[in-house]
Every structure is written in C-alpha cells, then in structure tokens.
Length: 111
Image 1 (tube, rainbow, N blue to C red):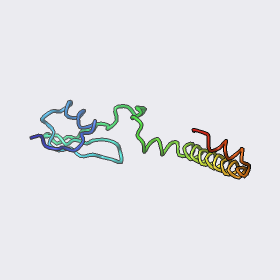
Image 2: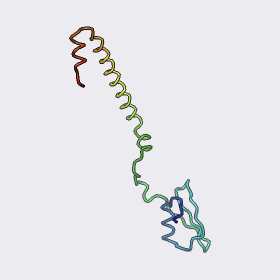
Image 3: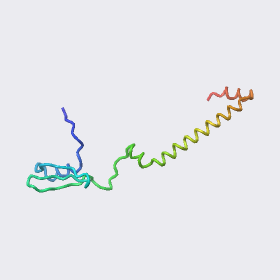
Image 4: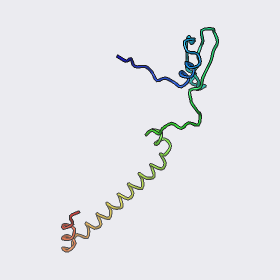
C-alpha cells in the first residue's frame, strides 16, 4: 500500500540529483526560498525552491479573487443595480394593471 508523503519541493529534487546518497539531512529555509542539504563529508549545499522566479503558477479561485476583487465587486454591484431596476419597472407595470386591457395583456403573456 502506498504511503502518503508530504509534497516534494523542487530544491529536494535538485539536491538529490546533485548528491544522491551522500545527503545526510535536508531542511527547508522558507525565508530564503531554498532547501539546504547537509552532506556526509560535513559540507553544506543548497538549491532554490523555484524553477524560475518569473514562472507564473496556474490560477486558482483564491488567486483570482485576490487579484480581481475590485472588478468582481463592481460587476456584482452593477448586476444588483440592474436587477433592482428591472424589479422596479415590473412593479411600475403592475401598477398600471388597473385598466382591464393592461391586466389582460399581462395575464396572457406566456413568458
């Protein structure tokens, strides 16, 4: 049965390719964005966790909301405004329903 492992970082793969079985331990330097490897002979090596700093990761829902919240908020406000205007117009048209011809027109509309 396969065991669940934590996500491997790019730096781990780079260091394993460089040194193979000569790595005694590894740690992640999150502040520096690197993985640091301690080798059997006492030396230390490190590798970056990013393939390229300019590499753009695929968009997620969270990243879209974080980047475009002003635009999405404007679209939502405009949609609610338009829905309110349509509702007000429907109420005004319903107010005209006192005339028998208008009531017949509105009730015969199949929609």
